Image 1 (cartoon, protein in one colour):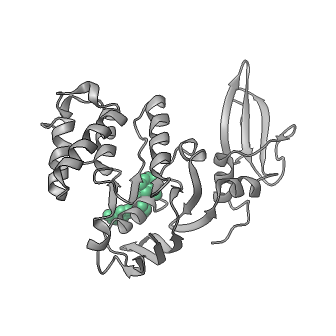
Image 2 (image 1 turned 90 degrees about the vertical axis):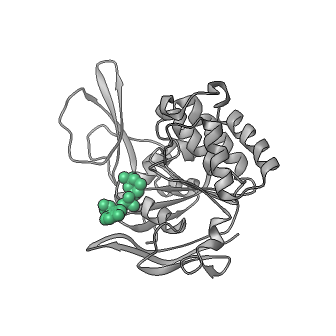
Amino acid sequence: MEIVFDHVTMTFGDDVAVKHFTATLNAAGVVGLIGPNGAGKSTLVRMLTTQIKPTEGDILLDGTSIVKHPDLLRTKLGYLPQQIPYYPELTARAYLHYLAAAKGLPRVATDEQIERLLGQLHLDAIHGRRLANYSGGMRQRVAIAASLLGEPQLIVCDEPTVGLDPIERASLRTLYSQLAQTRLVLMSTHIISDIESVANRILLMRQGRLCFDGKPADAISAAQGCVWEVAAPIGKALPDIPISAVKQVSAHEVIRFVADQPVIAGAEQVTPTLEDASLAILEGLVMTHG
Ligand SMILES: Nc1ncnc2c1ncn2[C@@H]1O[C@H](COP(=O)(O)OP(=O)(O)OP(=O)(O)O)[C@@H](O)[C@H]1O
Ligand SMILES: [Mg+2]
């Protein structure tokens, strides 16, 4: 499967949400889509999943425009939207059966898959309870199960780990990396630690534009020399610098920041994480294309 974003642009009135986004996805694996609030991630995902049409540019699936032929993609797609649909009166099992029937999936194979998904997403223990009485994280897991019905070749998920506890997040990472051995998983997220260990490629967006496309390791090595740590008394006023983390250590704080120089006296250079590297790229400290 090959997906080509060809100068994809989306404007809402005077607002440019996505601008000339160009990239090709053609290998199995997890692709992480990251960027700050309002960067254009959900808009890009909604165009890819044919919810909305780009105002300019095209998206091709194996050479054919899905903007013109959305049905080509829909049979291959599993989509987890950022705002999940919600059917309070149904149980998880009933909801998944309802969706499978609506998608026209074959009965026997789907029944087996639903039982498997309920187990993999740890929803089988709450058998019989209506979705209205689920916690937020349980509902999110039902939506994830729904997005995987029919074993889609392309899995697109917008903030899948929102509301999940650390154990469920780790379990979801494992599930997505297993699926990604033979499928393409495009995952938009703010929680960089959720993709750091599983993504083999990241697409970083800023103000509608793609500002980095590459392996996490390449982003990290590009940010070498730009990440610093300094200890400061708690509450001390700091210069206006991009801070990637603050750790409290007994009576002081350790401030981790990105800059091309150790702008605070006593700052020491540290090895970047993907989180630091993303911030350094977003701040324009690292030369990338785009
Ligand atoms: N339906 C819409 N009408 C008008 N503007 C919109 C619409 N959808 C998105 N936008 C605007 O497009 C820009 C990108 O929004 P988008 O939801 O794609 O960002 P995002 O990267 O997904 O952010 P977040 O991390 O908060 O989910 C924002 O400025 C937003 O206000
Ligand atoms: Mg979004």
